[in-house]
Image 1: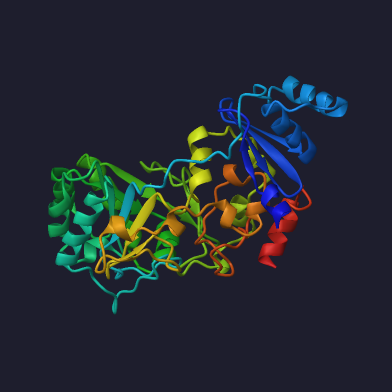
Image 2: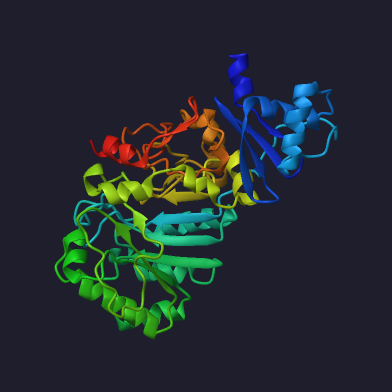
Length: 404
């Protein structure tokens, strides 16, 4: 057990250099230069000894000189080397799921929304939730569903929060938006996000299972632009749904599109080889520049949890719009700040199976709700790295393994 603890240790070699130990290899994170250097365990120990001002033997001196030549060696003997920690987790964004009903029946719906039998958040509960979000210091808010505009008190809700947040957005399928709604959104400073799945009407409607939904949605996008309402489109890619040709559309579905996640009605059957390949975590991902803030946040918490909160129609508080396996509790029992559980907010990759033994863990982004087996702490199904052998799985082999 002691050896296991040493293996997982993270060491600050200097204010800009971080040594992250893995089961087979280590990584030195250069937070100033934005680079990641993979080194042997022996080289990592030399870097630690150098930082501590400890004596090196001849072989270790040679390794130290190689590290110095590569520009990844901090100053020697500058005091104790401590485990580096990130900033405390503090939510800055909130989703309010004001209804889990929807007028469409999208193939992949993460909320598993239905046209009937769902639940609306009462206006009194909405006011309570908004007050708790404000009291927690959260300044970014999104109303979502289901289809939020299907809520009978939607207009009152928008009027209630208008001007209270630095960012306020409504996420909608757009089918209920007309000119009067655009004028209303403009008057109340509302941002709008609209789901669009294809430039082709038939393809979009196949996703939504709503005949004519594409025409209504794209008309809404055009009307929002005409009225100067800030609007973005969100596109989820899934197997068998062609993106189509842009043909002069004012929005770009390819830019920022996301591969369907395996949560809610999302499932492996909605993925094909191309989409799985897009989802894979491969060694090429770690050639991107490191960002200091991203790494330091990853030390403190997993990218899925700690930054956001999601409040359901029943006032249950979840850490993510797609996450329902764990909960902070209910706003009927306590205030939002009091409810937030440290074990959720402070969960990081050290708590995830296999990831905890990986030297890339603080430079790697994954989605906890996106899972094949439902286990909260399972290794991402799309990761191709084995930290115990230090080897990467071939991408073609990974796609074949995943899709069977």
